[in-house]
Image (tube, rainbow, N blue to C red; front, side, top):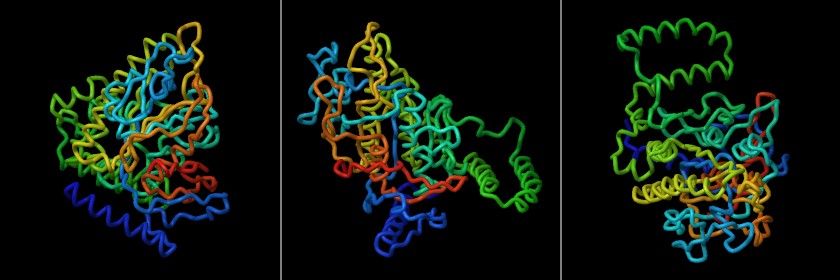
Amino acid sequence: MNSPTALSDELNRRRFISLAAKSFLGLSILPWANDLKLSAAGLGLNRPLNNAPKAKNVIYLYMSGGMTHLDTFDPKPGTETGGPTQAIKTKADGVQLAENLPLLANHADKIAVIRGMTSTKGAHSQGNYFMHTSYAQRSTIVHPSMGAWMTKLDGRFNPTLPGAVVVNGGSRHPLSGFLPSTHQPLAVGNPDDGLRNCEMLNGFTEKGFKKSLDLSNKLDRGFIEKYDLKKVKAYSDMYDQAVRLMKSNDLKAFDLKEETQSTREAYGDDNFGQGVLLARRLVERQVRFVEVQLGGWDTHQNNFTRVPERCAILDQALSALLNDLSNRGMLDETLVVLASEFGRTPTINVNEGRDHYPKAFSCMLAGGGIKGGQIWGKTDEEGREVIEQKVEIPDLNATIAYALGLPLDQIIYSPTRRPFTLSDKGNPLVELI
């Protein structure tokens, strides 16, 4: 098996050649080069391409339920809408966070806080879908999530492991959408369980396993040759990949028992903390995109009791991750994203809670070429309106794609021949990089 360093060097060489050809010769030699193409100008797009991306992988932390901005990344102490939450100084001059994130405050020089987020979707299902895909939810189509877009447009780095993984994602995640199943992110439930169903049944020998595979291939061959369709080939390829993974040493990437007890404790002993540790292990082995979800942010009641509990889990895991990536020399090539479908109301309701509020909220970026220690966007004194540098959800996703050097204007067709682009018509915040 190739060493991670050698594999990384080869991938850097291939990406450089691909980007150089696209930039200087007007050509594309990436895996999607044979797709039918439509001029991006026909869609009114002319978005920039990052020809020297630092980011190679993404760890995406999704705060499911709508994280309150006023009690995390955009505190308003001393105001009626701010409630009892106080602000604290951080390691970065001019950057304050809520007192609920004391550990992250020590890493503020690594992060860019986006306080100008806004959305048009105020319900969980629609907001979740919009954040993951940049498209409005429809009954007639499922759009791909960012991890699937990434492997489609830029390929997989490790041919054995899946290109994308979703931890604690739930059943509503759009996953690969209309893209072939070869781009389907692998869904992992409990990170402590490793990757299930990857061992042979008791009493089943390697010889017997190979005999069964040969028989299966023989039975399928006629059907595959007769119906030479993308979906059929994708299913066959996915089956082959599963077999390769079963026999690979890379399967250990899913085994958290390989980590020291002190490392595991640093991330927290809950599913989210261990999921974030799993994400670090996976990107270390060239998995391109790993999402880990933390729920419980739907604080209609008891906001000022429940949010500190959620923040304690997030603060420990995120701080451990930034410290770990930095110490391992992985932060420059790993983009860390923290996002939520919307914020919570500045007005505190009668149940000491905050309700859904898509009009203004916050997200965060770190690593992967992002300039740390900065704030982008501003809300008014009560946290109700974005008054500077408004950022819509497709813009955030376009920024993630730009940091990775993905071609924002590349057209991908759905099975019904409709053209789509990554992050719809969002424009990247190039100033952050």
